Amino acid sequence: MTRDDVRAYYEGMGEREWARLANERDGALEFAVNRCVITAYLPPRARVLDIGGGPGRYSLWLAGQGHRVVLADLSPALLAIARARVAEADAGGGVEEIVEADARDLARWPDGSFDAALSMGPFYHLTDPADRDRAAAELARVVRPAGPVFVALMPRYAFLRRTLANAGERHHLAQPGFLEGVLEEGVFHNDRPGAFTGGYGFRPEEIAPFFARHGFATLTLVASEGIAPDLQGELAELAASDPATYQAALDVVLRTAGDPSILGLSNHLLYVGRKVGGGGNDGGA
Image (tube, rainbow, N blue to C red; front, side, top):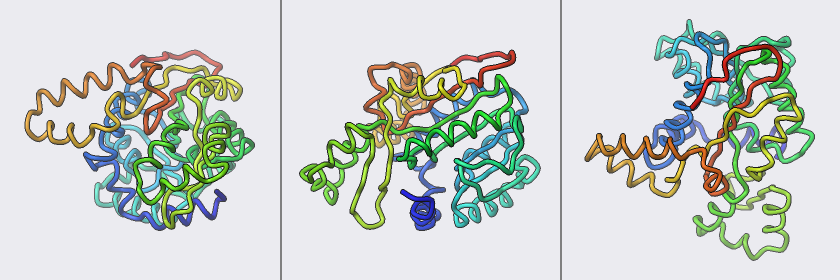
């Protein structure tokens, strides 16, 4: 997927991308788990780069927690939504800047500009190994020594799961080269108009070594939907009918989110690393 392809895909998403992380049957569990993990490792009152932050869900949440945030994304349409949401929330003081930028080129910011960084989507689309290397190297450059980074990733099996789940995409399984492309190369191509395509999936065991090559020590790797990627509707019903039991269920999801046995079957993964160099508290989840 080229830069223009990624931009075009998200330009068509509009408000759906803003709404996804609040949808109790889709992204709300992912958002809840990720917030808990980020909170555990993020230093207080940090200056944070939210690269690929789209319409600003994470940026607004971070600003509300007392952090200073720079929001950057490839999509002008999503950035326009972010500006409107920031204005509605009166969060302008916490969100320092909203700008168009590519995760592979953060040259507008000097070395060590940020205490921490989020990259909650760009790595989904970096099918070229050189692009993944550039994006990781740029994260390492703009974050200060000992600063944490939070990177959303997709495991390879997530692409097979979505293919099986979508009647209009199941034909890919019989196409020559499709399975090999996903399982051996991690690259997902989809000919369904308007659907997600040009995706890259990691093998969980490759993630820590990849980021280590770019100067990060791994702090944790979690499944963002934990043990419940296919139970989000049931959790939403539980939240409405029995909030106390729902909280207990969410605690179980969080407690088991780092279990290596479930990482490959998650819809999304969250990598947390610390830039090597300098002191600092690693935190804990």
